[in-house]
Length: 361
Image (cartoon, rainbow, N blue to C red; front, side, top):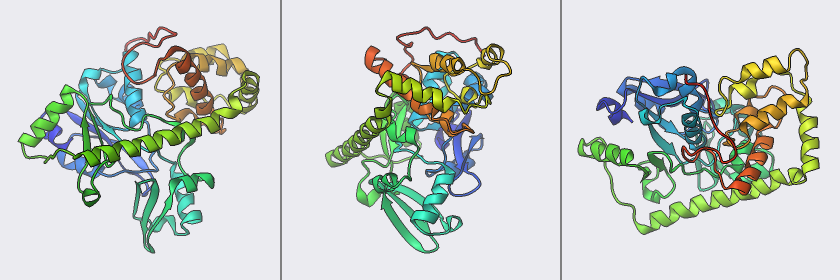
């Protein structure tokens, strides 16, 4: 990304930097190549959805060519917005990142104090490797297996546990540490070239001496696949667990009605959704005054997003009343996916059961 900015391939870089502490992230738009390196490294407590920023603040990347470091749900969100003409896909160079999931900053601090028994403010580094959460603090290094964490009620967000977009190959490049040889961990990145644009960037950067490359051997490729398969199998297991209480239609409807009864009609679930644009007004005019709103308020949103939910989790994470919105949305989307074979966020094809048409920004 630094080379792309220096060489004029893009006008800006969209990424994240450390926010308030080690567990917090903030989005940044960078035009100084020297600042790009400050976005290096993973922030597992940073649960931002960068794709929403393109349409909301960057005029859909219609005026700027932007390179963006995007995890799976970010990439899916980019495609959903491109379908709605909220984003110029030709101007977005997508650097996809392997992602096994993230947790919230608050949960990360709980893990540090309640599981690792260290002061969260003393933690200087957090990494995930081979299914373990590793930390470095004033007391030294510690680690714990992620499945063990989650069985104890800690760990990743529920939507991250169900996610199956671990390697976003619909980006131009798919990068990460899965498949990197043991002796190169922390010194190299496994890169899958997924488009001609991605190939052109890698070739140009290599010719300019900005990066060095080598072909991975068969053992690296097999190791990468094993790791991906392991997290995908774990996602299937979490889907079975999470969707089991919703398998019966009557039970699902009953749970949805009971949970949404806490709604204070703040419209956050609408504002943060990457598949919803210019849609707050119908909710305000159709359901004025009453709090909590009638269940039809939620049915309207479920209808709008039903076949386009990418399970990014924003509607649930940011709900002030802790309504499991993402669980309901994802269960509905998973049913439609099984019925129609349509996968939201994988490409620019239109949803199978609806017509997507939004006004131009």
